[in-house]
Length: 514
Image (cartoon, rainbow, N blue to C red):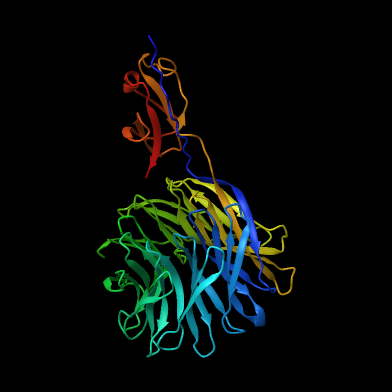
């Protein structure tokens, strides 16, 4: 009689912790001066795109866009200049499904103040189209945010001056070929101005824009507007605190998989100075919860970014990093022990690890890149600093993106003060997601090790404390059935599958859950 043969597919999972630098690269413009990364993106193949402001000819500041391979090789660079001697600044970048690249921001042109400038580059770096938008007031028109929808249409949001000289929230939708599909100017009160600072698309293809508006009594409000894909306003929400002077957004917005909207800004009061204010709205625009954060010293607390995970938990960073549950309950608050540290961006990876990046000053008084990672339970698991070889330099981080590998890409500038004037370059670093202990560890033969009967098959499951995993089985590697949900604690959890003794083959896998 033949014995049953048990075949086990063991899937090793990791929690994406960034323990090492994968690559670091630089870009220097054609003349000595300031080159600063302001936005980052990654495509489906893990190529990295950095956009920023770069010194150009005739004392101008230009757009610069650079593409790096997944291993960090610079593949191409492209530039756009406004009027000679004037300023152009890219503020946002996005990639479509064919790895074409879109960059937006604003540039000064003779006779028209500043204008939206949105450019599409091919995957090889060739400019395919450039759209310049000069608002009806021929004044200050600045784009701050960009999003690409599932049809590869491009949305750009910012501030537009109308014919009366009043700022409006401006939203433009372009087709993938660069045609203007519609333009919307929105002013909540009509007289004292509105502005769009952040943009996200929800799963239904609607555009949510957050910014600020001012009423006729010069009270500031956090403004959030949801537009349909046709440009029609669906709902508008205002945040105003009657006990505070101002409620002003810091241009941070996130949308979860259920179309709920998270907005982060700050609010000032005499008693507590400026505080974080974080708001959640349902997809229908109903206020769900509001949370404020005030440091114990009542110092100014400015948010620097907001993110949301797959379970709808919200994360806000600034002087501290806070996790709120989907119901708005504060789960944990972490402050990195650097009094002069500045956070500038936050992201959550596919394993619910939280990446925060910015800069802090070293013992010599110069700024270094600082990138932190917290687990979903709030434990700091990685702290990475970056400094160039010379002590006479500063490094400032302004942008963060995650690729499909969960690598964290950070970008900013490195300034070397031994040059006069100081020379600064784009600095882009890829921190690799490094494997940690496997959730499955193999194994014992039936009847040994775990004290089970000789007809039971036992294995162990391990991982970071507080993690949740669902163990599934399959007999054909196609259909997977839940076997056990486990809340991982410290150490190892053992269990068995009684049915393994009655099947010729049985495959297992463990999946992380939020």
